Image 1: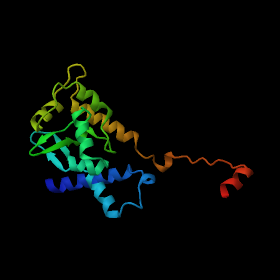
Image 2: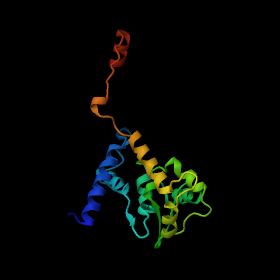
Image 3: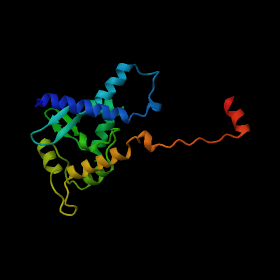
Image 4: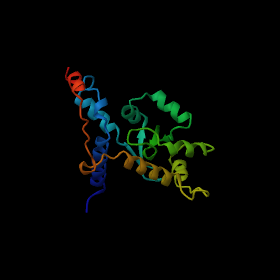
Amino acid sequence: MTSYTEDVRVDLARALIDRLRTVNWDHVSWSEECPEAMADRMFASLPTVFINDPAVGACFTTRGLVMWRGSTRQAIYQERRSGRLLGFLHGKKIVYPALQFSNTGRPLLELRTLLAKLRMPPENADQAANWLDTVDPTSEESPRALLTAASIRQRDSNRTPELGQVRIIREKLKPERLTTELR
């Protein structure tokens, strides 16, 4: 039997490995960042606050979101104020539940619809947990269930195909294109 700490470490390592699969390496600026800075950004993509009582789950701090998304504190604050992000006060910090984000750090599309139905956004972890687990009578699902399902759909749609599923098509080059492309 493994300890809780070991389970968390395994989950974090698994999350980091999943994030590596989604990196668009063509858009990584190799000249501007040293490997340590890139590693810092990758670790920032992992939630840093876990709220178990009440059951909110993994959350990001504002600092973590700034680092992961390459954004500013002001931009994140503005997204929260305008109802595009779910954030609330936990202790002395504002935290953002991780289940509202895609693998790239962008809010899930379903979040905006859910937040639009809220009269008042949650101010603390108790209110957030209560809202996340309140079942909507029309859809018969809770916001937590809807966001989890949306996250799974998004992750599955971005999955890299297996090599056996890939078919490489090579275009036959005409002689005039061949000489142009070789120049």
